[in-house]
Length: 149
Image (cartoon, rainbow, N blue to C red; front, top):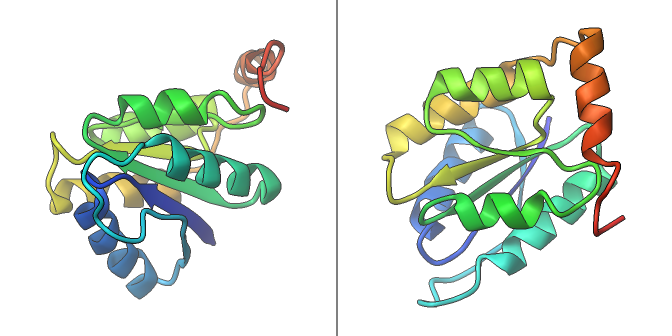
């Protein structure tokens, strides 16, 4: 399974730890930046790269990390076909996948440590979407009015 991962300067350390964890657990990981700590960099750039990569590779997943996870989530969700979810527990990650077919996981570097992040990421990546009719209908409606094709 391919995972595109990106972070700003606040999520850089956690991103590096997750890359090692995911790679050691058999995932093919593509680092979409930031590639160095540059204090005050914009979360938008790695979020756009990850969202674009996942959109082009629909079998893949994305992981985004910034201070609160809010900015990354908002930016990624501007892309048609991207369903980014800010998850702070394994249970929220499971529901994001089962109910909403989320394809990008957004994590907060400020509010969680590596152990929590890896458990949430593992749950997200190992949980399948349950395509009940109402869920599929709702997901299809998400792209009715999207700024980015």
